[in-house]
Amino acid sequence: MKILIAAAECSPLARTGGLGEAVQGLSSALVRLGVDVTVAMPRYRHLADVGVAVDEPTEARLIDNQGVRVLALEDPEAFDREGIYGPTPGSVYEDEWWRWARFAARVAELADSFDIVHVHDGQPAPAVLLTDTPSVLTVHNSAYPLLGPLREAAALLGVDAIHRRLGGSLEWYGHANYLKAGIAGADRVTTVSPSFALQLTEDAEVSSGLSEVIRWLDRPVIGILNGIDVTRWTPAKDPVLPAPFTAGRLAGRKAAKEALLGKAGLDDGFLLGNVGRMTEQKGLGLLDRDLDTLVEEGCRFVLVGNGDLDATVDDWVKRHPRAVWHAIYDEDLARLVFAGSDAYLMPSRFEPCGLGQMYSMRYGSIPIARLTGGLADTVIDLDETPGESTGFGFRLFDARELVKTIRRARRIHDRHRAEWRAMQRRGMKADWSWDRAAGRYLEVYEDALG
Image (tube, rainbow, N blue to C red):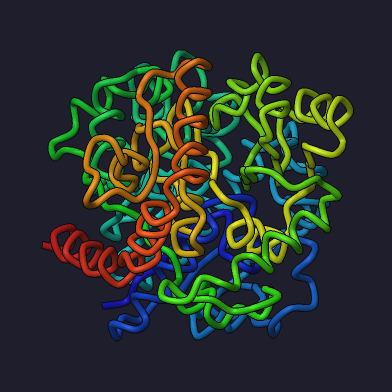
């Protein structure tokens, strides 16, 4: 079986969040299962000298990405720019619809040489309308459906007239909607956790209004929980960490916390970490009302990433320079946060799957999460299931619930160390690998072929 995977990101070549990690993890796991996999992504400016230039089957840079064949497609006008989606983290170019229509068209041309084309999120999604190759769409984040002018996008893509008419696969209230095109046109639609599959179907706010389109599908959306690359993310062998540690020997976490506090210039305390986009979706705005009080109580915060909440987070830093630190994303720093923080914050408004909680558990940082989407499928709350617990959860998207949960976690951390360590060990020993998910995707591919 020859699989073409198309996406905007593939870690570590291009990554802004979980999408890049998921594409790399799935493709690597499929290769381990003996599947012939090619990943197609744009050749961004920072990849100009990576890999080898090729002309067949298309003009691209051919890159060996940890055993996975990657075609970084050449399109200098669209992608030889600063950044992936915009010139700075969290920004977006005004002509995103134009750039990604060109990419989707290139993916469709490539797809004819493969048995399955598997597109990820809205950027390459319209490709499924342009090829007869059986197709699978995975929805990672429905908050970014990618919209553009209908007439111009349809012409650039070269879709049949039926797709751009009122109610057609591409049309969305007079605009082009790339994610809708993928949902309506793909042979199978998956998403990244069972709980989020249900939310996409039932909650129009979560699906960016596409729930009714999803309910009309011949087959329901399939929820397959993401994994992580456990060969790359393991605290026993991570060269970034000041000392290795395992579930049975946790002493190395103390050195990681000291290193993280030193790098951030923070006083000691109950250290909470977060790595990801600083956006309303991720829920960090819930901290704003009570941050001063939490700092007075001894909480410390390391927040890594950028987004539309940057100004709010930076104001926290100004008020509490010895208690709050904000940094741009860096993978080495992210690893130190997972290894050195006492707990990991994920108070998301919605979360399709989430990888941060898997990384944090893998590295012994206990998640404090709102139990929504994939977080509900992976974080087991102490009060609800004590003997199997791996973290602390709350369900109502409310600042008081978050603060109450942080205080509950700190109480266990400070007063019940044996119970805390037992939770750490359960999370570190859990199977977060991609091998399980890759087997499920193979079943979806075979079903689409059938």
